[in-house]
Image 1 (cartoon, helix red, strand yellow):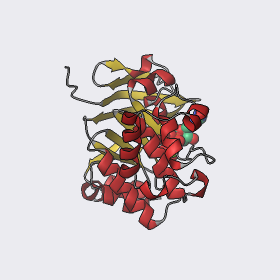
Image 2: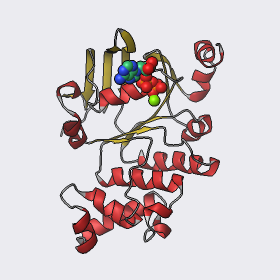
Image 3: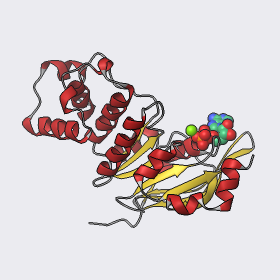
Length: 248
Ligand code: ADP
Ligand code: MG
C-alpha cells in the first residue's frame, strides 16, 4: 500500500475576492498523524483556507493535494468529504431532539436516517463503534440524554464524535474552544490530542491556553500566507508575529 509523505499539501495557493488576496501564495505541509494548530489574526485567511481544502471555495492558483496524489481542486465538497476529510464548523449541528447515542448512530452512515436510527437495532460491531466513540469524547454518562440538555462544550464534543464515526483520515476543526469554559477548553485540547493518535488533525483556534495545551506545531497565518511556523514558544518569540498581534 502507498504510504503518503503528506496527508495535506498546499503549495502556492492564491484566492482573491474582488481583487483582494484573501489567500496569497500559501504553502502548508501536514504529515500523516500530525496534529497542527493554525493561528492568526482576524481576516488572516484561516476560514478561507479551510474552505479551499474542503472544496467549498476553488483557489485561483496553486496545488492542494490529499495524500500526495489526490488533487482536491478537481473535486467538489461532497467528494472531498467522501475521500476522508471531515470538517467541523464553529456552530454545532447536533440534532437536539435525539439522544447523545442516537446522534452518534445517525452519524455512522448516510444510509441510515433518523427513523432507522430510532426503530432499528444496530449491528453489534456498529454499537461497539458508538460505544468507543462515546468513551473517546467523554460522554458515556450522558449517552441517554437528549442533546438539547448538553452544555455548549459537550455539544461540541458530541459533534466531534459524530465526525469520528465517519472515520476521516483528516479532521479540520474551526475554533472549537469558542464559547467554552476554561475547563472545557483544556478538555478539548486533550480530546484532539487523543484523536490525533488515529487521525490527522488541523485545528484553527484563537485561544492561547488551548494552543498551549495542544503542545504541538503551530502555523501563524497573516494576510493569507504563512508568517511563522514552529513550536508555540518559537513562534510567539518571533518579532514578526509579535508585530502582527500587538503592533497595531
Ligand atoms: P479568518 O478566518 O482568518 O478570520 P477569513 O478567511 O474569514 O479570515 O477572511 C480572510 C479575508 O478574506 C478577510 O478580509 C475577509 O473579509 C475576506 N473574505 C473571506 N471570504 C470572502 C468572500 N466570500 N467575499 C469577499 N471577501 C471575503
Ligand atoms: Mg475564520
